[in-house]
Image (spheres, rainbow, N blue to C red):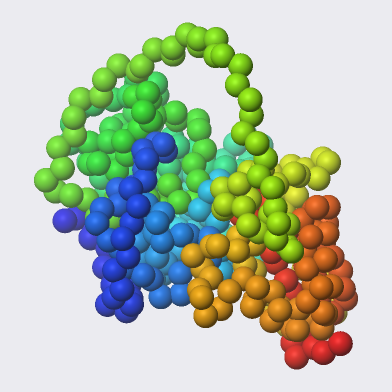
Length: 375
């Protein structure tokens, strides 16, 4: 296998096989999960063991290619930016002892500071012609990477060759045609279920990691099949009127904690003016300011799903609530009331010595506080 990525994680992992529930093929480019997986050491909090990407994400992390966030999450469904994509490729190239040929003179982008942690990564890709600046001289590091840009970066970075002359109809004649051909003919991409590739579409962090993983672990025996013509868009048929799914009720002290994980993420009412992602970023910034002003020494987060597999008979969600209340210097009843309040309002609770807020996107409570604080 060419460019085979050495994965040290398996030797260090806890060898406890876990049966994996089959995952329906509802996502384009879905990873395959077969048989059982091995539990990773210190897994990301938001990557469940039954995820089709569980093994790949943690192998790439243990190889030093991805790092995750300080709160212990990976945020797989977040759209990947140009600067983060550059950083991941840069790390992978170093690990595989690969370099990029410089094909362009580097001109300092107007919107890229020299003290940016991604400066060298972006500079390397610009010099290799893999990231382009716009007519205003900006490289747009925070802009979402497109699937077309991804195809060019991964094809060139890992030296992939076109093995079969198959092309998606919506890619034919574009500047990315040969790069997408290389991905498809090597089994790196499968395209969407309607037989399109969607060059201008964005992609998530987990899908970008999946493409990189496949490119670094090419199956020499893979044989691509011809790409059928795109499926015609079906004419929608009028559907009989149906009643919406009833909103589940809650009898738990912490509202919604006895709901399923999916219901928690989708059916909890959002506050007025809520914008997914932006609301969470705003709360993170508020908490950051409070923690700096009040000298908070720790932050933790956990699912509010009481029946989550992350809880065990030995240490339940209820146990965690009581322990968290003790850490912040509040009674159990006070702490539960605060949690219910932040879920309902979407606001950050500022207790000066501690903060609490709720993330609607992943169904988790986040708590920061002063270490060894007693009320």
